[in-house]
Length: 208
Image (cartoon, rainbow, N blue to C red):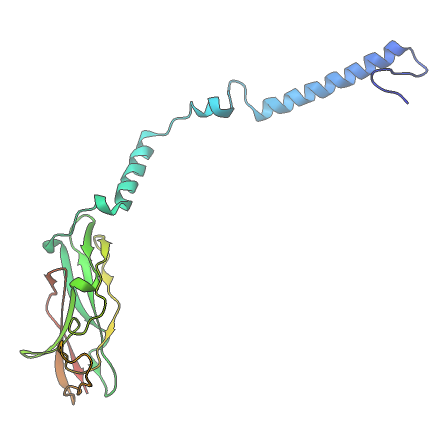
């Protein structure tokens, strides 16, 4: 059994030692070449090399701006003149038994992001007929909330629709059975407001 430390064989012992030293030298040269390919000359690598890496200034500025945009506290409150509120109904007329779906759309008509309270606590939807206020969403509202929402220019937001049950409301009638309002082609109007901003115009619709 031959070992590197004590080679034996038909040739002189020095010949075997030289051959094996040459093989070892070749292996070492191969390893060095691989290392040089992976780690380029002049690079320090590791933690020391990482310390020399610099981030482009424009990228730093962009990241700072993005962080500010993501922070609600960095965005100012919407001015009344910056918001446009519009009443929305899902249809123009409703057959007997069909419930109107009422909502509102809010749009930032300014040039920069702003923050508005779009919670139900500051939101109002009203159904009127002439000068008669027929129904109001706040009369029997439950658990009104405040919700800070960032409104971006040119990206209108529409609230979830509320189904009007076609009855007259008042704060005193929430637990009572209410009679339906007149139909047969009667015209009603939806008026809206949010955060103290009145909606523009009304959304008319017919009940049959």
